[in-house]
Image (cartoon, rainbow, N blue to C red; front, side, top):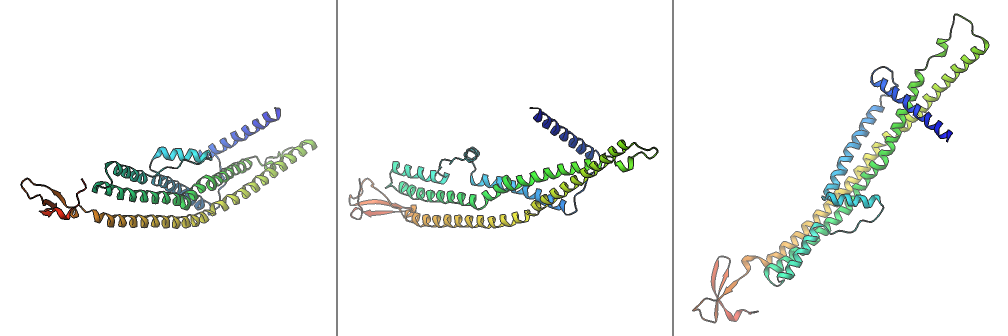
Length: 306
């Protein structure tokens, strides 16, 4: 318990010292160690990469799943490491409703048979949309998520550690120089002189150690920031895969719609003939109407279903 309290007090003291150092730097009351000239552009590029990756990732989620409630549910399932229940896409649901309506209203009627055709096409379009969502997640969404949740987390941790190392180094630099402040007007006793020398050596050792740790951490952080170039190359490849998935999706949709148009051509309203009786007309004939045209149709050429 005493050890934990001492460790806690030591950590709190270090945090307070760094906070004071940081505040004094912001107020211009303390000097700070500057990083090399190539470091700042790397930081700027990394921050910009993170910002735009977040925006692209967020908008892709909206595009692939417009319903925010479903997105939140899928997010929770993912965090709980559980499989989300399978859902039909909006196109598949629309297609099923059309097919159910056709069966209720009569699949043999022009309207019902057309509902069946369109419903089947909508289900195929919905399935293609689901496949696009799955392919897009693998191609681009997951790599972007990995960068934000893993790679950027590591970069942030190392940058924070570098800032702490810099504050520690600057704190050591602000310590008094024992060689310059040693009294020169009188002679110290042997014990006092030894103590003074030990303190001077201790301060020099702490400064060297702080400088070494700062340089080491600066190199580690710089390597991570330079690796952003590799991230760009990886995301470029993922972007190409995403475009390929979209191209396949739109090609499938185009083919499905072409097939539907060809099938619907057989059910063109102008190609349908409506027949009915007229009082006083010979029973061997009916009046037929096709679009804007009207004429007599012989009953012998018709098959009456009811």
